[in-house]
Image: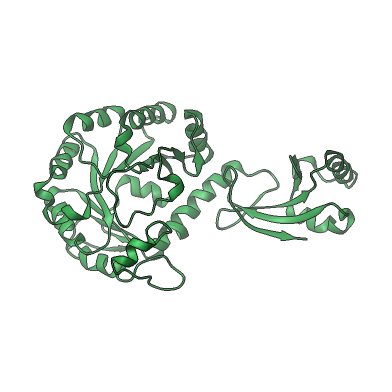
Length: 351
């Protein structure tokens, strides 16, 4: 019986792959290769916007390889997780980005990949030669009871022989216990994810009889409890809770990005968002007038920035001078947003 170690936000594990260790630090860039996938899993959470042949690095749409490298630098990424859709439908793109990332950031830049396909030895050799460090197989539910008689058994054996760290990653639902037994025999790790509702899978999930655990979570009733039972008899297991992805993983990644990209006057919150003041005015002459006023008030130039529609400024300075610069046609705000390119605005407080 393995020793189970409690993690953060409801997660637990007896084993963590190198990829999971870096994810815990928020140090992995997510490279979404394509939204195309032939499997049609009922629980797939991928948004409608991404269910096409499109590539993203974290939340940045990739138009060139520079976008990928800039995103990795922006968050000081120690590794990359390649996902989709089904990445191996675009094998040449996968190989290109593995080589590019290794060349740019060194062999220590850890790369893992998810796939629902069982690749043959030749494809796995290409991946290993390019520098893939870790692979996580995602076999369809209909095969879980007989994995030892499927191509996945061979793929896992081949991957291990090629010295690629090898595991299986599936949702924690009925049948996962059979996958756990297979993983034990195959000598690979098992990652179980708490099953979650999303906009795209809600209808099929309800049809299958699943329901929400509570009013404040997207997690499914019983998914965590099921993983707990399986963990008792699995040597290398990691359960990733729904709340962990947002409360820990995403927050740490945002903090890394914010620390690398924040302007001198941006305040970084505990959640990794940035806060700043904003003087909104779309007339160029008015922007110049505001800038002149701020200069007369001796606001340091590094504490503000002229933008396309106004001026961003340290929020605490804006609070102090708000009554002196208030004027018709000007809108004054404190803004909290994600530290990403065109990052989502979390809150916009009028002053």
